[in-house]
Image (cartoon, rainbow, N blue to C red; front, side):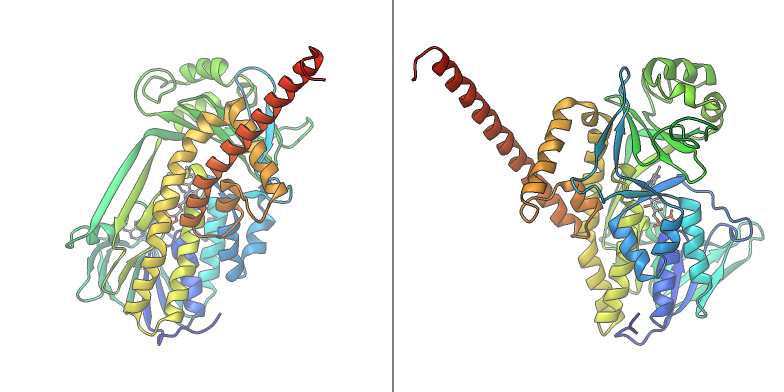
Length: 455
Ligand SMILES: Cc1cc2nc3c(=O)[nH]c(=O)nc-3n(C[C@H](O)[C@H](O)[C@H](O)COP(=O)(O)OP(=O)(O)OC[C@H]3O[C@@H](n4cnc5c(N)ncnc54)[C@H](O)[C@@H]3O)c2cc1C
């Protein structure tokens, strides 16, 4: 990696999650003296990090960023390719829909914990990275370029001063909370009415996909209108299922279905093909917590020499599988800006100018994709539109690329993907309209010929 256009100094990265760990690698290789400070304990000895999801989908943007750090191969070694959606209706056989007209394209199911450990190991391997655990950021002083950390077990506090401070401390960021107390900071947080709960489909000893109980190379969806379940494969042959149900109300909601017995009965009616694959459903349902999902938007992301990055800047709902991918793109944008500009201030301005609109665009698309996954994906009309999209892409790849491909299989800015996606909707409607007109004309012509009205 090139050295920066700025004389690299000391950088404090707050939060050693996915984004903070990758950023530490980039900045260290660009010559910065990096201090990476994490609230939780050091996970490297026990090789496991508890997180907000067991696995996640990494696609083109994330892979590009990992490649830049030399980590793509390591991460893909244990990844499972998912080339399309497997739709599970309430009754009848499940059916597969490829994500792209290009069958070589797939998103990748990876273990969040393993990914975080890979990134953390890579950061720790850099000579100019110092790691600290069990230290929670409790205060940021923007005028002095300082952050204060507290060890919640011992009560010991310490203050770190740096030339640049980056808050990569996730959706409930302490660095962002400090920014919220400064003037002219726009901020919104919008909780989804749905929560999520993770469940398991364990490996099986026999069957057509053993050790997997179902087709492994697909993202499984049980679309049920207002709610849904999805399942992503794991390398050990299991699937992690995630239920997305409303927090409150009747029907499929965490308020209405509380006990193991309720869950069994509900699954028998609503997810009948999944139930036999889930021997631990009752226990998992009773034991596993309900997570919340939030969209956070804010502006600016920068105050003085303090910047936000990743979920700290833009938590989004998980329905496009892009939160981590977008956070990795942020890392690239920040290190590029520090390389291209001649002052930290200019670099931070450039970084946020490049990223805020893109973060807002993927936040919008992620919200919309929930409707697509839980409701539209199960409808024949939607599946027909997808077929038309794939046909147009095959016929004119230089003029028409479906939105899913733009988001997941390309690195065009999210703003551009969103705008082109809107234009695609019109193009597909026109194509369907033309096809219907041509079919109607053919039917009428045939009828006229048959009746002798035209020779
Ligand atoms: C159910 C679910 C499924 C998802 N699926 C996908 C997917 O398929 N694909 C995808 O790309 N994204 C997905 N995401 C989003 C993805 O998890 C996030 O976008 C990603 O983790 C953001 O990385 P981050 O480093 O910014 O935050 P995090 O990974 O949350 O890391 C933040 C770190 O900061 C630490 N921290 C917090 N507060 C402090 C503090 N005060 N001081 C010090 N340290 C602190 C935390 O302990 C943590 O280690 C999903 C999210 C959820 C909830």
